[in-house]
Length: 328
Length: 163
Image (cartoon, rainbow over all chains, first blue to last red; front, side, top):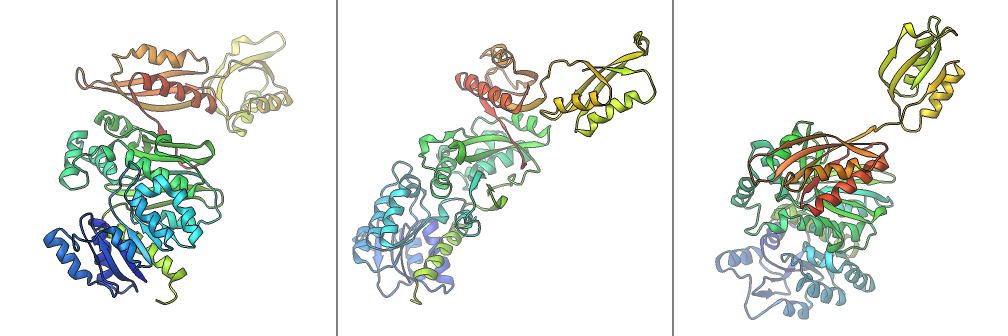
């Protein structure tokens, strides 16, 4: 099947590298970044484009853009990997809407459109009989979305608890293990590239909140927005708090929490026993769902990074091909 | 509770066994032999923890065994939860914060462990609340959240394990 990749940052390039290295049966016919695009209906040489991006900062020609790719129609699946815009999710939401309305499948790692407009976009996809897939939006490589749609299908989720932000988990892990203060651990996370120059989006719990909105609306039958999530971050956590928790065999982690029955969505630092399955170290993510039939199921894995995210995108691509590929 | 037993061998043991049978935990027993009544009975004071709603069962079993229950003390605060608070705890009237819980009648602050690393820096405290029932505990924690929000104090709740 033919793929157009929209967004050519770390995630888009990671997927291109994966598709270039092994034969998965997909042909990339178009790529766009924020300032350029390239279209080749017979298939692009991904090695060449990755090299060009590295050397010039552009993947294609500055005369072309996303709208040219949408108009060309030379793709079966649109892969949207541009960075998340929390305020309204544009321009990605518009791009996805256009592709779905043109009868194209969409796979995305972009949280904005799914958090802001999932129900609308899903309706367009259903109307045109195409897939809208978003495994990569939550917890990177951890296949929680497809597990709840597939392996745990039919279960009702009673509650969901998760460590969904690797940056926060890294900071809290370092504070506990090394006795670093919050500012010290944050600086270290920045030095290692785990935290952005403006870390508020992560440490104030907003990123976790957006992921909760996605999980709530797409998997737990809720209908909430970011403003419905009660959010506290980790930026006030003191070393003394970690010591007091430690004294009773516990530690502190930033937990996202969903309880559909109470329409409750909350992000808060919690005191959690060290032997609780959700206590993972470093940048790992963990999600625990309590299902009516299956009971407790816990997922742990890498929540970010080009290859873990590419893993989630690729799984969605393969699912689409299995259902719609007809051998092409 | 205060029990009335016949002063014959094995009576005390017979009265205690039903308590452990229904999952109770005996905290203290006060057994004074010099308090024997003219009817040749003696009284025993027992403080115990029971699983919720098991008190009536216990009283019935004890009566069937011929053991009189003279008096039942107040059911006390058996639910316990520790939370962590971070903020300017002293400057925002800690006494008032604690009073908000103590005044409820169904919950009270039983322990407070505070660390103040430096003047003008936020302090951190572990606060232990006791309440009569799980529902009362939820109400008490909600009150603590409300008060803390007004005072700009961060409250960390425990995340319970899997049932």
